[in-house]
Image (cartoon, rainbow, N blue to C red; front, side):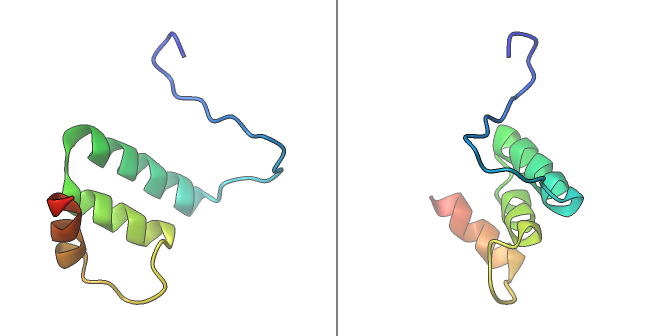
Length: 66
């Protein structure tokens, strides 16, 4: 948006984003802005992007290589 806010457009799926996921999404966005790969990994894990236990440090290193 012109005032600097980010808007999400919903194309018909009705629902809400749980606070835990929303907070992780905010963390992911901030990490992307500053290039913090470890925090990106931590935020993705908090969002439930993985189905098993993850070594966040190694995951962050993998993200860094991309």
